[in-house]
Length: 350
Image (tube, rainbow, N blue to C red; front, side):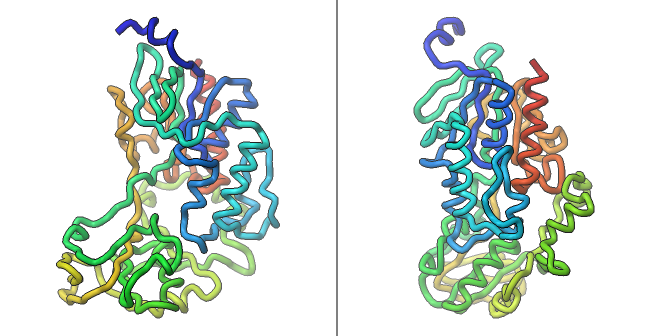
């Protein structure tokens, strides 16, 4: 292909950032301060919509003191746990305040190589760029167990849950072990007969210790900026307890992992079978990088983490990998630090 003809017919930027969440906005601000030319492509209609789409009662575990992006603090009391809408509105205000070039409703569909540059195809644009920063997160594809295909009752993934009105029937099964499962169960027990299927017994941990959020203690003892040991990477996150959460989730009837389903019935690992009216899967997500169609791209989360988000493909970088560089990489506090690191590496690479 004659790349010279191609280049003269489309936009060209030095950097393209994919995703306008905490990672993408932070990366954009660091590039802006460095005087670089860039654009941020985001699939949602408005900045912050990635947070707005979560269930209505969601609040961060992290106090506002650890939720700020570079150069513009979150305007809440430091001890306050922000709601998902407060974070969404803050991200929107942040992008507007710094006039970051975010192109909304613009999902990236394909990234290929065009000579020594990248060709980024999105909903409305084709952009040639020297460097691409993938910052759209590692939670694109909801995980649904194979046995769900045998169900004839309504079922949804937690990513589609908004409030108890989302649920139908009387007897509800929630599948999953983590914090999302626990928080949704706490809401549902006031309205439904709730059952809880878990692959393993969850671990519990208080969100507050001696009147302080555990993140405050982690920061005080310099744990937030430490790397996670390899042996701890795949350990389950504990369920964080606050207010009356534990007493509410205790109302749910516990079951082992589901091994099969048939119509309304599910069979658990103890061979007990029960009928349900509705099932909610709080079973996590998987990353999806099928849009990156570049020879040599590793497409491996563990390898990308070991490389601190720097792909073997020259000019391709990642943000938002769980525990990418430190224990706090999944938090806004750590994400903006990872963004500064990645941008410094990308600029230094020439």
